[in-house]
Length: 236
Image (cartoon, rainbow, N blue to C red):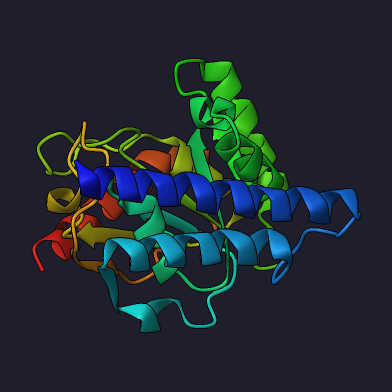
């Protein structure tokens, strides 16, 4: 209980401070873009929380994305630790496609909006398509997307069927899909828990899957290829 209270207090404090920094930058008219405060603040926020929770993030396969440029990172999702581990591990400018309800959380939602994350309502097909259209506009000049392709958290830790949106987005942009498997996050923070446990996370990055020349009809084949690649990463 004490561990949870201390972590929550730190989370609220860091989130409030970070959001104030983003609001101040926005009021001053600081432009967004790679390397801007809108990217630096979320990364600093994540690193601070990971250190406070004593969680170490290790990366395997980082050479697969060196100099890659804009891509769509396709990741599994089993724990609330996943977004932070992913942001810590991935290089360059990254925007998350996240469920819209998170953008309504006081303070935290404001930070998501100001840092350029992309809301999506998967319960509404038209709204979801609008979100991915917005992502197509944002993802340029080296900015990449990170998407939890199962659509929601896996309750048993096994890979679930993938949603199509990430693959349609990659095809529309003609940029690679990169399979990413997060190993070790599930025991650190299970559903219903208020604070993570100390431990180590391994972020396994697979080889980029090209989409050049693919069209909308190829989305299912691309999704299957990514699922197979992520399954191989899960096996170690």
